[in-house]
Amino acid sequence: MLKVAIIGAGAISTAHITAYLAFPKRCEIVAVVDMYAEKAQKRINEYGLEGARAFTDYHELLDQNIDLVSVCTPPYTHAPITCDFLHEGTHVLVEKPMASSLQEADMMMEAAQESGKLLSVVAQNRFTTPMMKLKDVLDSKLMGPIVHVQVDSFWWRGHNYYDLWWRGTWEKEGGGCTLNHAVHHIDAMLWMMGPPVELQAMMANTAHDNAEVEDISMAMLRFHEGALGMITSSVVHHGEEQQLIFQGKEARVSAPWKVVASTARTNGFPEPNPDLEQQIQKLVEELPDVIHVGHAGQVENVLNAIETGSPLLVDGKSGRDTLELIVGIYKSASTGGKVTFPLEAEDAFYTRKGIMQNAVHFYEKKTAVENFEDVDITLGRKLES
Image (tube, rainbow, N blue to C red; front, side, top):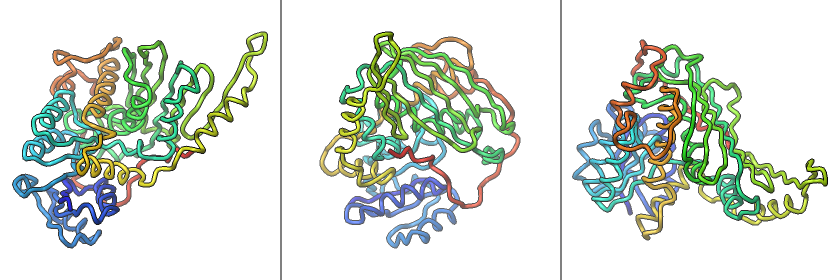
């Protein structure tokens, strides 16, 4: 039985707690940590965690032989907490974004390597049936080479969303919608496409004058094989429509699921290719559904890796690759220039201090609310097949 601790008792912690409770014979939550003791105890009471204790300082757990921790704290704290537990011999599942800078991400990966313990970064959208099937379709090469990818990560958050004390600042949140919302879709795109070689981006703050960071960004990408891409990240889109579209030379597929295949008439104009559409659809229908979805699926993957040595689907490198693309968007949008990858340690945007000094500050954050009412949060629209 693996001993698990939850570090941070905010809204996202409920997804982690529920995920671990799906595997009662394999793990037990023994501690919940939060700077506000009453929040930690509330989670324990709410979920009936009879063997768990509430703590206000995670350092108290470093010598308690905890097997696995979930880090559910604000982004600027991810690196020190993760490194401390890894060096103490504890596996870590850290919420997105992995860190607030590439320097911190590299520190986390180095700690994992030195300790020999596992580091996984939350990307729960991979662990859904639509995403798994979409990945398999792309891997089948039935679509031919990918020529264009479109990521629409559309969310909506009210003005008071950025009143929370750590949100809306480059120092503590590390960025706006691109880092903290589109990170899910950017991770999925990189998982399926691999990294781009260059990008050009723009960003703005159109509706949240209580935040330093962006509430919308757009980036144009070029990939190694010549494909182009477009990422739009937003918290100003009513309806929160979200989609990933992959255009292949022979067909188009997307999440939410849609398949369209075309062939050329003698004059080059399109006509349907139902045979290829049916072939792709047949592949999708024959693929198995995911049993444990979202955070539970990722927790299962981490438990399997600890118990059997099987590979992590989302490791530290995956988390860093996603962060590097996002930092590239911030660099391009702030400087007006084209960004090429990789971003080296000498880059002005490599450290959190460098980002704070060089990224565009749209507004001064004037409001700092300690806590919101404990209400449910939304984790995005499901990209159903």
